[in-house]
Length: 155
Image (cartoon, rainbow, N blue to C red; front, side, top):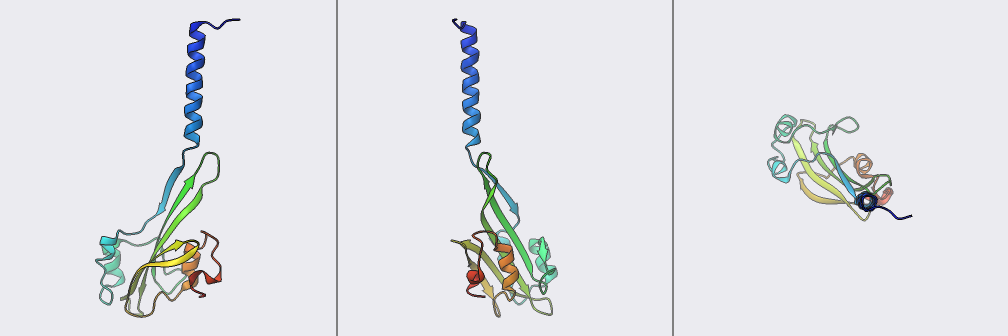
């Protein structure tokens, strides 16, 4: 049985549409979650001078702050990639930690990321010791590469 010209045209269009859908399913889809203030805004924060209120005014209030720690601000951003029908996988996570003294003055502004499953400082402006609660920081960064106890330098 021979297909008519119209039937062939419909079959051809259906095949092209199926091919487009199949190729589209193989294209990775990226999604971003969370928020980290841009570096220009972080540069406005003066270590040893700014307070909680002035940091909140300059860069906004983070989603995570002081609940599990002694009142530091933690800004977290992550990026996920989904490919076809596979579950989305986190490919990047970054944390900005702003620590305050007991009187509420900024002590540290630090940026952390991951490199090969290890937490690495990306930038640091410190007046005293670096972030004191490494366990909380490890929890914020911990899902990528399943960080072990040595993830923060043996912390």
